[in-house]
Image (cartoon, rainbow, N blue to C red; front, top):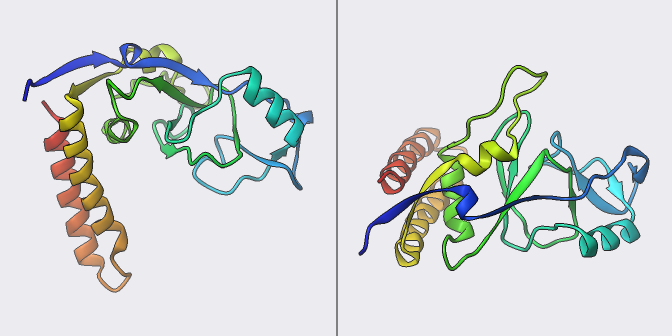
Amino acid sequence: MFGYARIPLRDVGSICMCKRILKNQTNTVSGVPFYKIGTFEKKADAYISQETFDEYRKKYNFPKKGDVLISAAGTIGRTVVYDGMPAYFQDSNIVWIDNDESLVLNSYLRYCYELKPWKASVGGTIPRLYNDNIAKAVIAVPSIEEQKRIVSILERFDKICTDMTAGLPAEIESRQKQYEYYRDKLLSF
């Protein structure tokens, strides 16, 4: 084991967002789901045409399957792993880092983001996470092998926490606290 490096996210990869979609390019009936900050992690309530989706996906930034999307407005730092299904995401409110997975795994980044390294700008109508705030956020990056080990442990705890039935609320709470404790221990260097 060679330790770890504390690096700003700007050194992990470039911060990306989808091309802006105008309101008149959306509808509420059919097409490719368009996720806005209010529907992030939920069901889309707006859609764009397949043609617009195909054109924008080819011409502009678009996440790869496995990229970790981050909410950059409202509730800062919520994450969704892009599953590769046709979907489009609101510019500047939903962003991702186009990282090199030979340096930092997407699965590891997701857990780092949960530690909330964000320093959001306040003073406007809603809190906002600007690209500069993201770029300056610092995370600890161990070797790829260590990242895989950490992710494996945290995924097992995730599974334990989410597979419990509603009849075991005390166990769920206990496991969630245990998971958070070990997540913080494993990711604090």
